[in-house]
Amino acid sequence: MKVQKKEQSLATQEQVKRFKKENPGWKPEPPLSKQEIEEFRTEAALRKARLLSGDDISCKVSPKGGVSVYGLGRFPVTLYADQWTKLLANASRIKRFVEANCYTAHSEGISHRIA
Image (cartoon, rainbow, N blue to C red; front, side):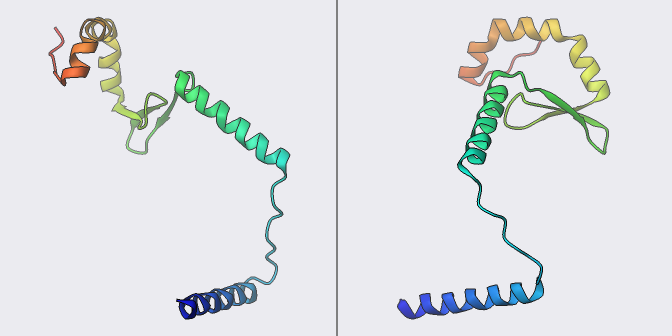
């Protein structure tokens, strides 16, 4: 076991030497200060809160012409423009359907046709 660790250590040392030789001007970045780490944590917490609250919804057009909406869940919702137009034209019907069937459809995995 000790022999393997020593061999791994030697291999790592060789990799470091090779890297330094191939990249002579490279210098490692200095470690982050406690203040910088705290700023990153605060920023991450704010992003997470915005994401969970649903306030951070954004859109993007894909190279193929699809419009993706981010911030609704883990993955974006992507439709083409004509599909978004049709969906939004029926928004009130979809909203009524969801309000009437949300618990039933979610808990039982039932799919209903919207009238």
